Amino acid sequence: MNNHVTVLEIDGNALEHNLNYFKNKLEPTTKVLAVVKAFGYGSDGIKVASFLEDKIDYFGVAYTHEGVELRESGIEKPILVLHPQIQNFDAIVKYHLEPSLYNFKILRAFLQFADQHPLMNYPVHLKFNTGLNRLGLWHNDIPLILSEIKASDHVRVQSIFSHLAASEDANERDFTIGQINDFAAIVKKIYQHLDYEPMIHALNTSGVVNYSQAQFDMVRIGIGLYGFGNDAQETAQLKNTHTLSSIISQIHMIEPGETVGYNRAFVSKSFAKTATIPIGHADGISRKLGNEKGYVTIHGQKVPIIGNVCMDMLMVDISKIDCKEGDPVIIFDSQKTINNFAEASETISYEILTAISQRVKRILKA
Ligand SMILES: *Cc1c(COP(=O)(O)O)cnc(C)c1O
Image (cartoon, rainbow, N blue to C red):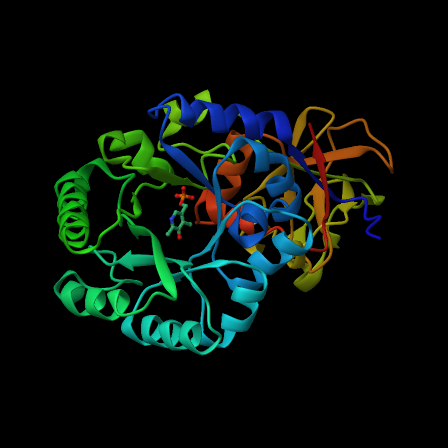
């Protein structure tokens, strides 16, 4: 049982608000796949999936074991595994997970596996590369792909999909339109040669915002569910889902010339009061936030992180704050404070959220 005082609270009402915000941008028939990989973007994949299950059509995870965890906690909706490996096939089938087949090696291995077991019409998803050059089958290989798939009644293509490289970037609009057109041509070719029509999908969160004309049958929403849109304007319409808080463990009175923390990185110029907070870089608070680059909030007032962030703790300057040991500390509680953390640690909101380590206790409030 995790009884840590440092807690990440996930706001179910905010999740639902954000889901509905994107649903309102879509045709009523367009399905929604909720991306809950990486512990639901650092929140709690299981709690989030349980909360969303009756509100969405599909779940998406990156790795097989993430899907297994969802099944073991009772999730029944279809789960697309974006990045399975051949070593995972037994678990995929045992837990009725749906693999993305993204190259010839995994396609052929799964066809062989399906033949040996044997499976009937097992749902698989074909991922096509249209420019991200990360995972995906190639357009030119469609005839060969189809000949191998059509020769087997052990699998059924549940969907065909691709992933955009720069859907959030207006400067890459031409490139993105090119990806969408290439994908549409891939789908057309496959539809011509298959006697059924698999679902098709290409958009992530910022794809939904910027290219809703390409919503096809389904969209895959990740970061948007967790409160971050394409830009500040979009984000302002969404609600924050992640609130990270803790308490003051100890307060120290520091004399001029004394130092605080490892490497004596903070040197006090005057009498100061510091507070030690039980959260550190092992919990996802980057060391880049130390030395007054980042701040947390105590009783509504910003207090800078001083010295180096330790593994399990950080220290803040509370000289100007009236507070006592045990008082609450907000690490972040809004998109603004999360974005400030992201900027100060030279990264993006995705990394701030997903970095919150499993040591931090999770609560979902709805
Ligand atoms: C992570 C991921 C998504 C979700 O992207 P967001 O930008 O978080 O909405 C969608 N599709 C694929 C293939 C992904 O890997």
